Length: 95
Image 1 (cartoon, rainbow, N blue to C red):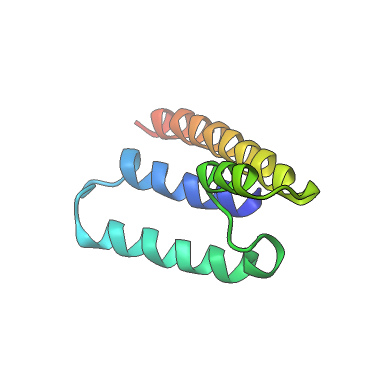
Image 2: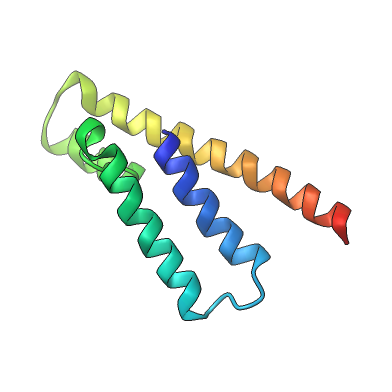
């Protein structure tokens, strides 16, 4: 959940708050954050940061933990949306 929130928050921050949205630095920072999140959460969740991946795991295998992965990534996405909304308000205050 935390890994998804951090990863999606970074993507949204790069998309909306950096001047060079299409530059190589944005892509590199996203790739390195994904790599770091997979390293950190890999032993716990298998690096599951995407609700679509968790949903496909629910379809192909059933485990009580698979549904937890699905809902945790959804909650992480919601947390990232809240963080992005807060960042937007702070960014508008600075203008």
